[in-house]
Length: 502
Ligand SMILES: *[C@@H]1O[C@H](CO)[C@@H](O)[C@H](O)[C@H]1NC(C)=O
Ligand SMILES: *[C@@H]1O[C@H](CO)[C@@H](O)[C@H](O)[C@H]1NC(C)=O
Ligand SMILES: *[C@@H]1O[C@H](CO)[C@@H](O)[C@H](O)[C@H]1NC(C)=O
Ligand SMILES: *[C@@H]1O[C@H](CO)[C@@H](O)[C@H](O)[C@H]1NC(C)=O
Ligand SMILES: *[C@@H]1O[C@H](CO)[C@@H](O)[C@H](O)[C@H]1NC(C)=O
Ligand SMILES: CC(=O)N[C@H]1CO[C@H](CO)[C@@H](O)[C@@H]1O
Image 1 (tube, protein in one colour):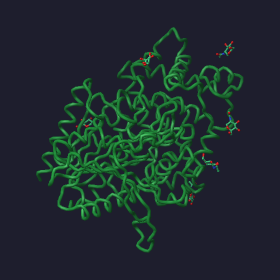
Image 2 (cartoon, helix red, strand yellow):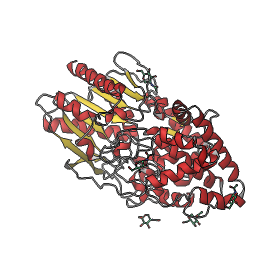
Image 3 (spheres, helix red, strand yellow):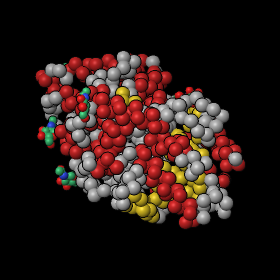
Image 4 (spheres, protein in one colour):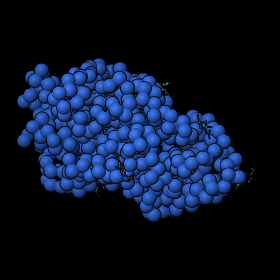
């Protein structure tokens, strides 16, 4: 269930995920597209269940700090190779890892391999530093996390690309970067910052614009629910307002405990407890919208048959009582779907897990690291600070306080605002200036609000996929794929084919 970036910035395509979910979706990514991660604490990490399946893992030596020539410390970064489609003289495809363990399932399945087969490409997947088995430091202390940033990750990619090309005679080959969600942004930025190393990029569902507060995420959730049934977000709003009010009356805690099948009696001590509880419940809707009908057969993806249609069906079902009762029914449905007996929401436990700096702690699957990146580079906080969205009770301050509580009391709104400004200054935000990057986006994916959604130029096209969610075009094709999705995959292929001739 929930992994932590929900709490702070849910991204991720479902796929990287190897972990298993606990109860809402989980997805602790495994890399490419990351999903949201919430309640890391509450998620269990069986990571790497499938870690060795198929693809052989290899290790590459990297420097800890690419930006300090006086620091000679090194570490080993994990990567995977698939040479099965390679034809001499063909391009090299590099899948960029993201905020979770790299999922070797990508070496067996996925649209990019289809492209590789047609184009004779050699395929690599490089795990992101500080995630999965790519562990540059002995633990995840806040001091060590200073070496975790998108800039260091891009320098890892550049070094991997240069050395691998030199060693394997691939220096004259055209390298193409792929990624979805945060790694989609990295794929775009890799081309932007290292144009001599990367010929083209496919940046799927990529949030290229950093922003401290991201209430637009929930606005898209509202629109995506409304597209199913205009009443649906209104009913959700009534329900969450009612719940928010009831949380103010301790006499109702027994009722709420029973209604939402909580594992322990509701016990509210701080505003953070309230916000965490409300955010967890809203997470049911956020996850379902973000991954609506994404390919559920993909190896490693948390599969469920719960779609926007199903949730809105429950919200409209008058036999379940008033909207508040239906909202509780949604929560119970999600528990049942993920075979959970009860809803374990405890902010104190979550904090204990998020502050644990051990590589063996539950939050080391990516939650502690990703939230650190949101606190120091991107923000992306999916707050309720907009009147045009249906949820209540988890404002920006709730997320900012976590940065201070988890990492360092000196992290506050102004330090993050500065950092976000610098991120956009460094990469250009929406105003990215380079060539040969395609930006596929799904119309119902809440992340498209921070993505490139219109062609910037002939050389920087957007590919719009009506009716799909986060990273849909990266999954293997299915019979039931909508026409738009099929066309989008073909469109990206034609672009690649043309670009590789240039
Ligand atoms: C709370 O639960 C009690 C006992 O089940 C029930 O009688 C009462 O109506 C409930 N109150 C609310 C506001 O749901
Ligand atoms: C949450 O967990 C903490 C520490 O494990 C415990 O002391 C507290 O009672 C729990 N709160 C609830 C509401 O269960
Ligand atoms: C989802 O699938 C399960 C098992 O196949 C089934 O029992 C359940 O009714 C389905 N739920 C929905 C909402 O379709
Ligand atoms: C951190 O997590 C590990 C693994 O779950 C556990 O053994 C250790 O006691 C935890 N450390 C703290 C300080 O809670
Ligand atoms: C934020 O923290 C910095 C130190 O890290 C401090 O100088 C500044 O006054 C703080 N700002 C606010 C708004 O608390
Ligand atoms: C949802 C969304 O923003 N979709 C955009 C994706 O890109 C196309 C351009 O190809 C835009 O027209 C869509 O609005």
